[in-house]
Amino acid sequence: MRIGHGYDVHRLVADRKLILGGVEIDHSLGLLGHSDADVLLHAICDAILGALALGDIGKHFPDTDSAYAGADSRVLLRHVATLMRGKHACIGNLDCTIVAQAPKLAPHIEQMRQHVAGDLVCELDRINIKATTTEQLGFAGREEGIEAHAMVLLELRNGTGGQ
Ligand SMILES: Nc1ccn([C@@H]2O[C@H](COP(=O)(O)O)[C@@H](O)[C@H]2O)c(=O)n1
Ligand SMILES: C[C@@]1(CO)OP(=O)(O)OP(=O)(O)OC[C@H]1O
Image (cartoon, rainbow, N blue to C red):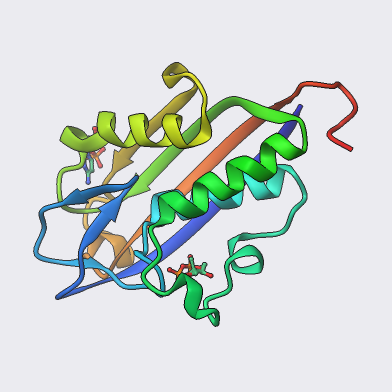
């Protein structure tokens, strides 16, 4: 087995879409980034890459590469899933937390789970996504940004440590 952790933050600004877990959410502010700035999917990519000792999202998808300008982060996640399969690994379980003062994310969580499970080609009950506010404290509490944390356990199919 391998464990991985991912963490990402993107700034909230006017005139950008708010996309989390591949779900476009109606809100007055959206996340700024080189890609679609899907902070949840970026944290998940980093958790899986971390578990596989493959570096991080910026190494695989540099923000200096115009190929990723405005990129759909689900495409990036599917690429990471391909790398994971190449290492004979699959998702044991994935647990994520989105830190956002607003908007209310609960109505969108199930759709995010469906997207993530689909992109990682794993059962839905291996994926958990939750949201919390910070009770108006800090940058997330001031609605200056949204952060996401992801923890993943990977199972290795060949029992060799994925080598
Ligand atoms: N952006 C958010 C934040 C939280 N939730 C849901 O509300 C519950 C209570 O949040 P607290 O920060 O007050 O603990 C939380 O457990 C989530 O279910 C949400 O939907 N969207
Ligand atoms: C995804 C990439 C690439 O478009 O850009 P951003 O959307 O800025 O996201 P970030 O989490 O800062 O880092 C990874 C980047 O290389």
